[in-house]
Image (tube, rainbow, N blue to C red; front, side):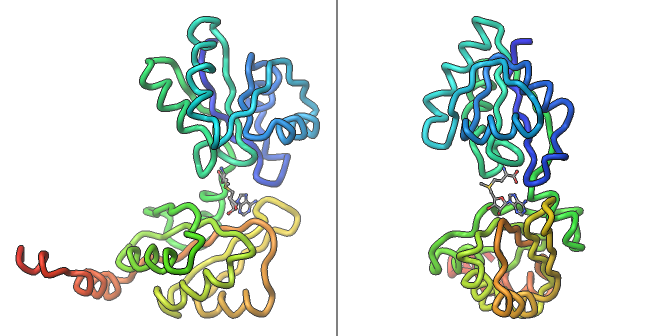
Length: 247
Ligand code: SAM
């Protein structure tokens, strides 16, 4: 049918590919893939023959490509499958541009859901899952990272960050300095893979563990939200002169 389908792909374990994903890969008229080589690699591992046209659809061209792909949906009745390298499209991955344009043009868009590191890590963290906020990647620069963490000081919800191995030590230092030693957290690495590992503890403990045994591979950080006292302290410390005048 004429539609855009966002489809999640495995984040490490190829066994997580759904039957629906396999059918879509085999049958879609057009597959818009973040990296075409990786797409064919996945299809090979799944034993699926991709019959449709495969086009590159990534961060740098997604705005330009979206309308052309949607023209195919509208005029040819095409099914356009959108996949990223791993996990859910649009979650720190391409996909948003075509969703927005499909909505604006009144064209159908649907989703074949599946793995995403944010939910996997959150569920395994042992921290509250009833409310959480996803912050994507922590900023690369120390000063911006500190600023970002300061803005989250009063956040009561469980906080999820993506991080890379080469910045994890610095990120742990900043978490320790800004959010303090005692909050509970989980460093979740290589999720769904053979070497999956979850390091749980306080920020101080996980920081020490990172210093003693630097973690490699892909990782997600899940941090406990502010306690009542921390939230209270954050709201009073960030009151500006203007806020005071209003009060
Ligand atoms: N769209 C993806 C999703 O739904 O999770 C996220 C893509 S983002 C570019 C890649 C980041 O996701 C990695 O740097 C890491 O932080 C996280 N990630 C992806 N796969 C992971 C895994 N198997 N284990 C831990 N973290 C993972």
